[in-house]
Image 1 (tube, rainbow, N blue to C red):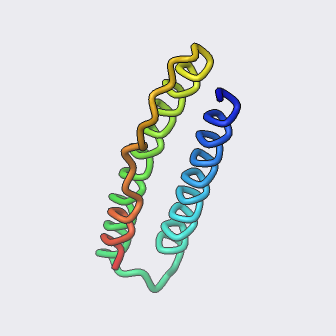
Image 2: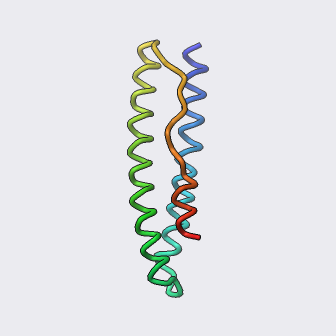
Length: 91
């Protein structure tokens, strides 16, 4: 049982970290593109701050989940991350 919970949690963590990586690459492209308008650069800067906050939540939630799994007290909850929020600001 614990192994299945750990595998599921690990899989979700990897997917969410991949989403963060993709989002950061997109933001980097906006920040490094000479054609980006000042408004796009500001929006990308705000989005970077939001991604950092989301990553902080992901790390804390994952830490709590791993402690719970190790202690055999895991409660199945979804992480509170909405990666779409930052991407919408860039459009």
